[in-house]
Picture 1 (cartoon, rainbow, N blue to C red):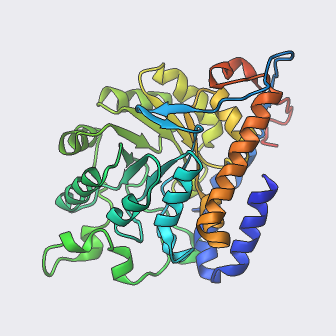
Picture 2 (picture 1 turned 90 degrees about the vertical axis):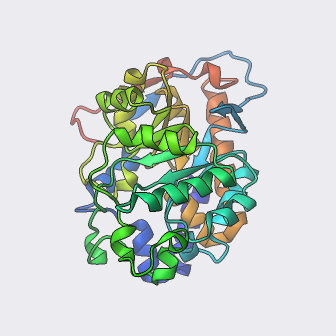
Length: 356
């Protein structure tokens, strides 16, 4: 992990209420998936190319036609106001300033229009399909009107994973905080908790439905299998996000780093492949790109950065990872992203077969 990220995490844990810090840090079950996420990236080794002109390194790229300064971004995560009063607006602004992609959660703690107004770069909207399908449709329509460039359908959360230390699934929040983007669409007298909970009956047909009501590309988040990626693409998805939901859903799920190559090979250029989970340095990002990812997203590091230093903290976090990526790419002999390919990586020798 980069020293900047380590320092921000330590400062955030000291500054946050204990329950909030635990909520952000926790994983589901025995936290096996949580614990393996970072180590999985270290199970690869790099094969640098010597004697290449790397006097300049160009990290610029495009995702769905939108220009980015680097193949980095912030993954969707809930309730940024627990970390800082400026919440998702600060995170979105800092991410854009650093040249990255911001993905806004349905469980944002600010109205999505306020976050969109603050954004200084491309942003996508993460979608939970709720039991009240009309509730989902109304929020998606607002995201489209506010300028979202794509929808990211979370597919790994038919039910919210249980975190033992929370005595349930999430931290206690006032209802108005939980429903900030939903309250205005609820019918009078509706059971808000049930209406806003995830619908466990959704299927691949949901991809086409979201495309139809939004007119936007739809990516599916939580894909860890090649055959599942193909199913999503066949159903109309523009791409997939390889993710274990931060180790907060199915415990003992295969780490994103170890699932990535299979998914990339199955997609075979038919759509985008993004990845999150355990990425803590530019070397991790370089490894992800070499395995075939189009971009890598940071989850917890952005929350710790927000808690530690607000908007400036998030900007510093992303710039540190971006600069580390540029440094690692130069050392690997890659002057731009077209030089990064599968030949750059190899599995680490490990006779035990365990993660380092």
